[in-house]
Length: 436
Image (tube, rainbow, N blue to C red; front, top):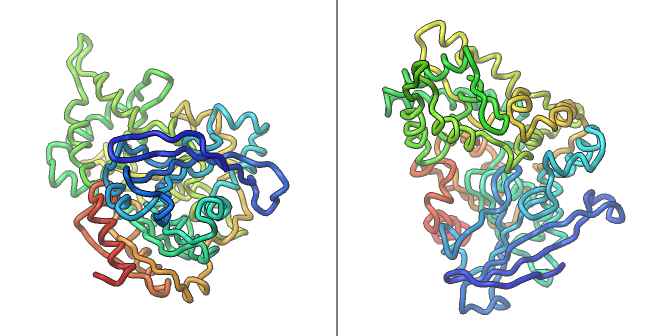
């Protein structure tokens, strides 16, 4: 472990940390990779007197959020914790995994084998590898947002001795559901969220059909090589999982067309905004590993589950929709094979993605017996009709983890920790301390 630099922002003191951990924790003498984490302490506080809180970001594939000062939930956390913002392996300033670096591994088969070590089980073992050097061996509190909550649930299964408490927001996973079952429950939610958007903004139903018709006849070629197809346009529904996402989608759609000498065309402003929302350049592991976070049967590949299940929901078929009068349905965080043809950040990794989709040998992530005997205080915010994580699955898991206390709310969408900030964290801390 090395501490590189300490510096200040408004109300905080930050310290950069770097750690070296095994790529495969089952082979500690083998290849190693680097992890980066940012420590944040409130200005004027003695860090040595504070307990640690480890934050695990959502994803997979996103580095920890880059806060400026005491933003959002961090403000509440800093009143009593020394916070560690970990860039999970392959993300942020940790050893990167993307189209530029993965070819250094060799063939697509070697790349896929390498990426098989980037799931929640490895992330938790990373945390346990660095914890003793930071805390002196004391357990710490983990705060997991979305996929970070999946990691926290695995933490409770695999290394509960490392935790003094677990706080989960929008990230209680099913302990048993396959990727197919996850998406079977997801498509009806996507339809509900789309129809709710059209109920709020009725004019958007026709706008979406008009854009889809234009893209169905001629996909848009964006600067940098990104190709906006009608299916890619539908995936802008990922916005509908956040508190202000419906409003963002509305503003995006209302500026889609401009008059030109050749007639109405999709505007540069619309195409640029769509590309920024759809590009995986900053988080390619999200696309490469997304379905693997649900893989627990060693004999079963995920096999492009979202794509396969979508075929059983013809209302999401844009071509059929445009032939009739039904509203165009948006999708969300689904990853499809065509992503690796339309996004230049993913195109070089297409064969690697195919190998990961076909991979078997995935190991179980959750120990149900150990969770049933859990002794770590746990609290989870479960968002009613969460677009990304099935509420029924989350509540089933809550009942399976001994002592877990839930806060079920429709006040926030999946991004409640960002939108609700200190209040969400304060509620979860009250629950684990039995103060609610």
